[in-house]
Amino acid sequence: MVDSRPENVSYSSIPSGRHKGKTHIIIVGAGIIGVCTAFYLTRHSKFDPEKYHITILESKRVAGGASGKAGGLLALWAFPQQIVPLSFQLHSDLSEEFGGEDEWGYRRLTTLSVQGDISGQGIKGKEKSANTQQRKSAVTKNSIQVKSDLETEPSTLPESLNWIDKEFITEWNQLGNEQTTAQVHPYKFTTYILKECLKSEAVELLIGKVDDILFDEETGHCNGVFYSPSSNKAVYDQSIGKKYELESDKVIMSIGPWTTKILPDCPISGLRAHSITIKPKEPEIAPFAIFSELKTGPRKFASPEMYARKDEIYVCGEGDTTVPIPETTDDVEIVSEKCDELLNYVSCISSNIRNGKILKTQACYLPVVDIPSSSGPLIGETNVPNLYLASGHSCWGINNAPATGILMSELILDGEAHTCDISALDPSLYFDASLIYDSENDSEEVEEEDISGDTEDEDDDENEEDDNDITAAFRVRQ
Image 1 (cartoon, rainbow, N blue to C red):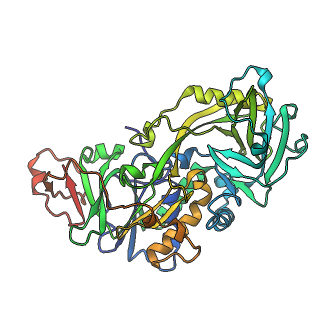
Image 2: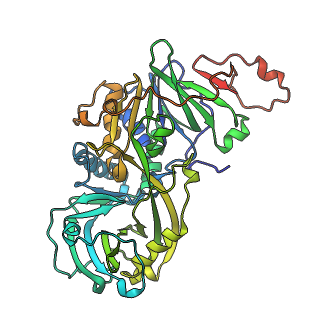
Image 3: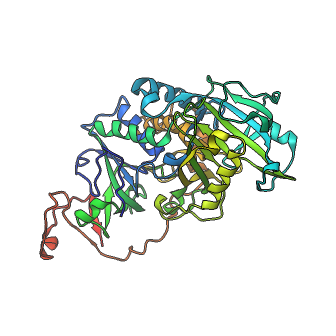
């Protein structure tokens, strides 16, 4: 079993007990959305650590999905526009406050859409429409179309773009400049903000997989979760293989494409995206993000995206839905051929990449909202009281995480979101959160066990039978 924590982040597999006697908020998912929600909750004017406690439950590892493997592009032309301007500004504010340039690679970018012809280099690409006019008015980001109203520029690329071989580029246009686009390293950002949350001592991180939602039988309200410890510490404290009930006043689901594992009626699916990171031969990398459309043969095109970070180039390709979402982020299947294709495509237009060194090959799932009238995300309280959703951010989760965090803090502590109008993103409009999977443990007896004390060695099984001091807020299910 893999150790799930980032360096210098404390975690456990069972609660500390600090939530007792306080308003308890559970956040399911330690990705960028869940972490930003915890962060802005602790910064809300009504948040008092003597009265509130936040538990973040993560199944395997912090930022183990797209929050650790996405490109980290930030753009004022992202969607939905209800929250994008706020979130873009919040990213800038956080960078200024915490030194984001050094801590998580925040920097402003120029973003281009380029077209090129690499068909003479023996590269085979996926067949796509050859509609030139469409390619001039839109680019594709992880298989999600991003519109551009800018006109195509002459073939000469900006002189400062020093890591693209210009002779293979036939057309280009500018999608954004340093006033409208920026970037972060998602994993570094998420783990840094999480550490800031934990400093408040009102937030704790538990490594455990949530299996179900707890409902009050009389009111129908959500009042907690069932979860199974899944970290190395679960072995040490003998909690592995057990299921626990953890009660709370509010539950926030922020597990992206894994939402339907708990809420089956939720219209969010997963789009798998492969990516690679490359250390280029020449270390000086001009700050550009590149959306490309590369001709690989007659009526065949490939569309890799390239984001230049300070010390590496991130490359990702189009998404696919060929493999269902696995149980956890650790189980995501990486198809090596797709990563090889990405390298081959971008090597054709960049000798700096071609002569560089591959650092990582990886894949993750993006949460896509399957609603014709909405591109998502879904942010707010579901039709089940005290059960909230913050998910479905598609390819703009990194961009929109800070705004989502602030809005969730307002919903939880003020009862309504007032910074932005997110009425169209209300999850209760689109699905029934009261529909849940039947638990195979429903007919099993729930036994009580004291897990709040020290985890000392116990040789006799009868000791467990005598431990009945556990509060009603936390039970073990065997």
